[in-house]
Length: 280
Length: 341
Image 1 (spheres, rainbow over the protein chains, first blue to last red):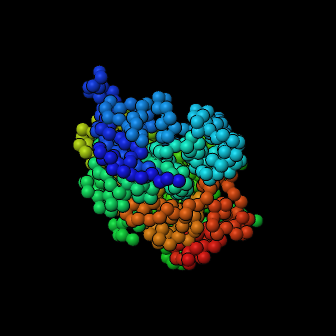
Image 2 (cartoon, chains in turn green, yellow):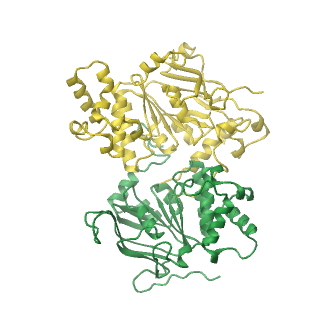
Image 3 (cartoon, rainbow over the protein chains, first blue to last red):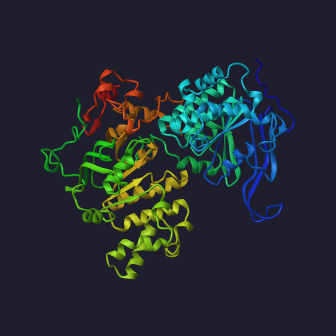
């Protein structure tokens, strides 16, 4: 096994797996310049190294989901671009081999899975879409292994998404992403809709998969507590721009930008001040 | 046979017990909710809401927390009935007629919801909706207008004279929630039921709405039942906490003490599951499985399939809610063990 070495290359992207440069996205507006449109993302630069998790935080309208969708190829930016292992990534469907290297996990596991398909067919579909990633040997065995990786028993294979709990659905979504052996997982509020006790399970699962599958992650969330637990680095977005970026603990322990401070001030902790203002 | 878990040791002596305790503003005792012959979505829930106190009702999906709040205000979905006891200032609410329930609703007990857009009328101006209850009281138009402006201002809506002429869709999520708070306060209720009032909001907006609710609660001496899945919101806002699981009370008591030292393994696991923002902490060992569904509630203690302490007794016997320390009630067979550890 060779470990990925981060070399400094001219341009300063190091050995970045994902390199987002000068990303700009406008919704609506007229003409090629999209005059009068809403600029959702305005000049965002981000990098994610191999096996690194970058947390992308911000409030609604900050543009964090738009960035995620550009990385997944679901939205075409008006300017700038997304490079993966040094090569430009086009829109989804025209990415060739890089297509399967970037997989996405969405917020609502129920609406991102076809409720009538069995879990086995959800995974089988992923393998049909990306034959290069399909198992060479016994598919049954591969399927069982995949389900075990996400903490599901083999009996789940014949169940339909509609029969599963929210947590199980999210495990299936993760299994579907893993089925095509991605290098980067884009998680868009992947634990936000889950019950607290289930959220802890999925966070633990993702943290484990990162190591076992050597995954990089772009983890979009509004929850600073979740970022603290899962991300190596964090980028804070506001109104389409990144206002602060750095190692997670540094940013959260000593925020530099006033907006990061405002977010931290508003974030609640279990042992914070109670209704009478007293601290625990 | 264990029978339904009823009030347990709620201090039923109530009204003028030996301790001289006054009847609380609201006393919920052995409350059950369900379709006749169907499973009990809420099963034998007991707790109290004292005057000028915020009680946090914590639970995950299927815990019955929202149904409990809806039973209190008398807005249960069709086909679902409430049983047990709801005492409002000593008066039996479940036995009261529809006229009396309507009179209580809005004027004595008001409710705000997670999604104000669903609760506000999209075709009416905000000011008209906030002033509805005042107009019904027969207040003159100018007085209604003055009070609406005052209420919107109190709820933190900027430029209330101008905003009262707007429609709900012209408001942001945070402003809508403020308008709904103004509407809820219009009838000068003594109890405000708040069902996930900040769940759909951004954190900075959430912080402002919670600050508003806390100050309104304090300044008006309002009692509040805050229903939430978010332990952090409850810890920040509530004096007392009721933790529900699969339609039953798992544990209840003073907020701070309960969260710092749980007496039920479910509470302990919930507390561990909350990711800290300000401190570096390792990932918690999560509970296995998903929250139990009341329709398929496991036998014995509903939590036993997920409980790290589960023993034989837990699989067969429904635990009673017992007082483990003054004011602290737990529905765990081994509450003393959990509380002592």
